[in-house]
Amino acid sequence: MMFFSIIRTFSFKRVVNSVFSTVNFFLLKIKVLPKLKNQPITITLELSSVCNLACPECPTGMGKVKRDNQFMDFEMAKTIIDTHSKSAMVVILYFQGEPFLNPSWFDIISYAHKKRLYTLISTNAQSLSYHDCEKIIESGLDQLIISADGAEQTIYEKYRVGGDFSKVTETLKNLRVLKESRNSKTPKIIYQTLLSIHTEFDTKRIKRNALKWGADKVVFKTMQIYDQSEENLAKWLPKTKAYRRVNKTNDRIACWRALTNAVYTSDGTLVPCCFDKLAKYPFGTNTDNAWGSKKRKTFLQNLSNGDIYPEICKNCSY
Image (cartoon, rainbow, N blue to C red):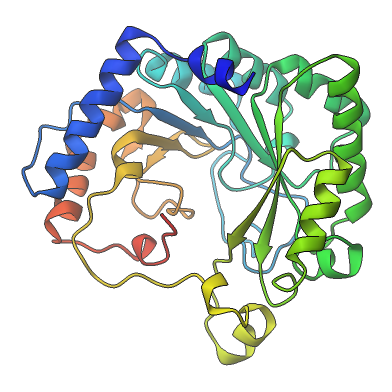
């Protein structure tokens, strides 16, 4: 079924664009600057820039994310999808914030599905009722990431401040029952946990329990720690060095994500990638043809040449 979810996104124009993008990427790597006329393979839409939790190392949780619009409305999402759907194969429906707080989430997912895009979304599962779980399946969503750190409330709440772990397990169980009763293979449910000093030695139990509750797969992710003070690192940094995210050193970068992923904030601003969380490097909006703008192309070429090394690249995990 997941194979079908991917295959249904294929079209001649989309495949040609993917090949063209790959050629552009390798030209950037060898410092032969292409004209960068490729279109996005992936679209990222920030459905919400606000959240119902206060995670201490998240820009939204820290109150640093300031957008003109808290939510991306359906018409804006539709316009962006229509602009890029001839080339794009995937739409990521989250960036900062909790996407299911957006009142139009069902309509946006459903529309993207109708445009034959592979749809995925990430949630903290704090606002999802049984009825919401029914709508998730009805929307045609391909993949649902549930972000939860740990396998019990006492560990979970250390990072997911204000969260109720029982809502996570309830959502997983509701989705499992609904998928089974409707004989639905989608959405594929990913249980994602940040690796910190609180979770690094409990990965086996976390994986075992998450699969039991209804997850299809469990993923462990390195943690982005903004406050690098000794005191704060003691709160979060894993003792296992392999579980730590390492800041990258200055170098010329041929960035696949910036080349192929059109990331739009909730107010419609195009930014280089998902690491520009505060929109420090805006290229313009969809209505300005920001994707094809000289500003964006110059940014990518300067990045490839090593003329710039933005702060957002130093903590990149890709």
